[in-house]
Length: 140
Length: 144
Image 1 (cartoon, chains in turn orange, cyan):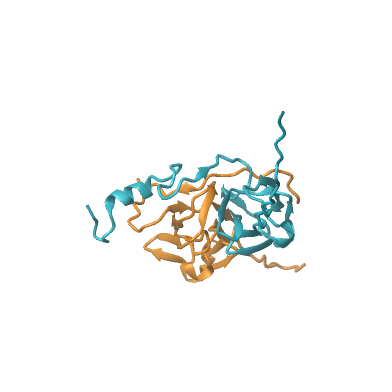
Image 2 (cartoon, each protein chain N blue to C red; image 1 turned 30 degrees about the vertical axis):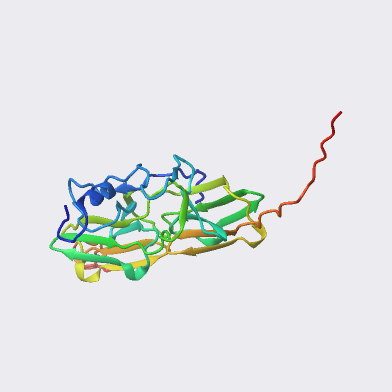
């Protein structure tokens, strides 16, 4: 399916200091995130431009998934900036994990500044087809 | 006043509330552009650099051209590919087509422009043109 629409600029969202006070230096942003759920899993797709794959951390602390990305490719401190439309910074976001997630099977990949985290659901809640057996005098 | 990390709290306060404010180090023109992608233009003594954060691009979908001092970035950014059989709870990542032209603040050699894409950040490097050599032109003054 090809979608015919034009992208508009979405301003980068600074981390909300009412819920998370960042004490580390630098700018901190909330990564734009798509959250997609299927009967088998929940998929988080996060835009983290400037973050390489070994500069991102995803940790589970109690029932929260905490994602932190440190920006390494954004701007060169040596450069003389002539014109600026956005700020470069690190990324941070929390996700509350529902009990249906199988935490041992969570998988994360990073490509071109996009972090994808796949959260599979536990077997008990996945949809399944119940096989119907034939019983009785006449089979078939 | 400094905090436990030895950083000046006055400076920190300025960093935290920096959104939309001008950088104190050097005056930066700040744009309120609504066309994707947002850019940063910087320079050193040899080249101009145009950066844009555009994560998750396929390079096949990206076209960059320079015509005189006009830089054009054109392409499309698909999201949600490979997802099916489910539903979105949130959809914050921008997707669709984009085309943006930027008039560069200096004369550049478009023939030697290069572009790189690392960790979702596009960097276009444009060598500055040699400034035209000054020509000595004697002007005759005529009078009565």
